[in-house]
Each structure stands twice: as structure tokens, then as C-alpha cells.
Amino acid sequence: MTNFVNKLLIALNENIDLKPDEWTNQRITTSGMKKWVSNILPSELLQRSVKDAVNSLVTINESGNFYERFPDIINTPDYGDSWGRHANYIEINNRAIAEMYGDRTKNGILSSIKILPAIPPSAKSWANCVILSQIFPNIYGDGYNKGVFEENSIYGVKLNASYSKNIIDYDINMPPEEQFKAFNDLAHIHGLKTGFRTVISADQIKVAKPYEQDVTFDWNNPEHQELFIEEHVNLINTGFEAIFIDSAKHIGGYDMENYAGVGALPAYEQMQYILHEIRKRSGRTTLSFAGEKSTGDFERYKNLGLTTGTAFVPPDDYENVKYWSEKLKYERDYAPGVEVSNDNDEGGRSYEDRLNRINSSLFAYEYPSDKLPSFMQMEDLFPLRYDTNTHHLMMTNPSYSTDGTPLSHWENLFTKDDGRAYNAKVGELFANALNL
Image (cartoon, rainbow, N blue to C red; front, side, top):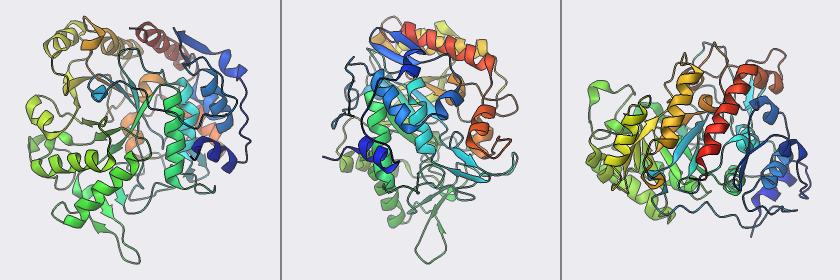
């Protein structure tokens, strides 16, 4: 059996012998046996090596055992088939934290590995799930960063074109799928579930064809539908267990007056088939499908095959969140979620308001088994610099480096001392929740 973490280390010219990480031990937050790094700035993690990150994750793994070499078999945290109904989904913009060298963007999967030690692991009763913002190549400018206001949207993707040059390390001797497998094994040893964002608006998807021009995706083309299914099954087979579906509310032409995407969407029965086939072909009974704003008509989305949806329960009102957790406690396969912030967040929310929303997400229920799912963005754990925001980084891909180096970009992408203090407070909230 291939050990993909060891294979990644070797591909990066590292040895596979692991050692306890003292840097990590000096920054640990604990909740019973659960450990992670907090009171930090992301740049402190991102400037470390992948080998440092592996040492860190093995140092703080929940078993309490230190592995001198990364284990050959790491299983996903087991919360049953319906784990996604209660999970906290934390979206990490892996493009924004990728390595920026001049005008090039690369190796976002390595940056995602480096930041894992600072993501709180799952609780006793429910999972934390990291959602990666980018997997597929974006249509324009993939592999490059551009000016602060030049469009380089993460919402326009190519299929049949492997994976994004922003994300995969194409300079090492390791296929993209195996790099995803290494990421997923490292997330799993840290007690996290994983997933990725996808788009379904036809005019936001291109299909690459060898020696021909790309063509616009067409839901009425059986070959395109089959390609969509196979691309997602291939990713599930690398260890991801969740898919966040952009514009899911409008599948089948529902509430189209509020549709902000571009192009046709799949029909309702068509999407039922697609989700069924992804589950069937991957053989994974644990998959979670989270739909953007797929709330309100709960039966519609439950019967579609979704597990949860965003933006139904007002996050600022603790008692209201608790009311809905009680009202929906017998709904074990689908429930709407609490949204701390989403990919359209344009900033400006105070730290206090974000902490209040996280508090509602983690504690507003009578019993932990009744907890509603929740949705957070990278900014809810690691505050971004004041002149940018989550949505801006989804629509554009600027480098904030002042000297053309990745370290300068990482240092300037996030806030400084106040961001560190905020991260410590987020850590305190999770520390109080993880043993529930």
C-alpha cells in the first residue's frame, strides 16, 4: 500500500523520519485529547516546510501516540453516514494562501497542508470539515496572480483539464491525485473531514478538448453530464467526503429571480441522478452534499440528495439558533445551517460579531446531538487585512507581497496583532466545545 504522505515528503526532497515538533508544543491549545495550534498568525505556519507540518500534525494527533514514520493507514474520522448533518464546514481559500512568486501562483495544496495544525479538530459529537475553495483550473489566468482589481474569478472553472496550477505542485514527481490523497491523510490524522467547492452554472464551466478550443458546458449534453460526474467521483476517490455546491438553491429553476450565477442550471431530477451517481460510483455512503442557500423548502433539498444548506438560521440570535436546533432535532439526514460568513462576505463585520456567530454555531442547542451544521470562512479563524475580504479573494487573485516572495504575501494577507488575539479567542470557543 502506498503511503502518500511519505511519497510527498520524498518528492519534496525530505526524509520520512518524523520528530516531535517543539514549535508546535509551545503553541498548543488543548481540549481533552484534542490539540491544535492557536494564538497565531497564518504566516507563522505558512513559512514552515511541509515536513514541519507533518511533524506538527503527528505531534498533536489525538491518539497521543507519536509516529516516527507516518502511518500507512489513516481512516477518516467516523461520525456515521450522516456526519454532514451536524458538521462545521470551514472553507479555506487555498488559492489565496498559495505561494506567490512574482506574478505566479502555485502550490496551494502545500499551503493547505501547512495550515492544518491551526484548524480545530472535530468534537466528540460532530465533525469539523475543511472545504477547499479551488480544485479545478479557473478559466482565466490560472497559475497567475493579477492586480488587486483585475478579475480572476474562482467561480469560472475548466473540466477535463486536470487540476489548478494555483493548487497542485507540478514541479515534483507526484501526480495531482496523490497530492490530494496526502492532504486528506494529513487532515484525517488531525481529526478533520475534507471537501471542496464546485460550481454548476453552465456558462461558468468550460470543457477542455485536446487540440481544440474549449467549449461551454451544456447540461443537455450527455457527455458533459458524464464528465461532471466522473470529475467529482475521481476527487472523492482521493479522500474528500464533502462537496459544497455553489448556487444549489436554484437547481431546477427554483427562485430564479434571485439567481446570481451565469448560465443554465441542471434540472431537479438531473441533479438527483448526478448526486446519486457520485455516491454510487465512489462507493462512499458517508458523502455530504452542502448546498449554497438550499434552505426554506427543506423537503425539496432533502429529496434532491443534499445534506445541508446555508443561510436559513439567523446566526446573531443565539436563542433562535437553539429554537431551530430543537425544532429540527429529529431530522437526521438534512438540516439547514448557521452561517458565520459565506463566500460573498465583503468584510466590515466586527470581531465581536464574528465571535458571537461562532458561539451560536458551536453551543446553541440543548444536546450536542441536536446541533445544527454551520459554515465558516478562512476569515472567521484568521482575519484578513482590512482592505480585502473573502468575496474579493474569490473574484480576484492579488499578491500582497512587497518583495515578490511568498512570505511577504502571507505576512500582508492577514491582520497582525489584533488578528492573533482574535484567533486566540476563536481557539477558546472551540476548546470549550470539542469535548461536548
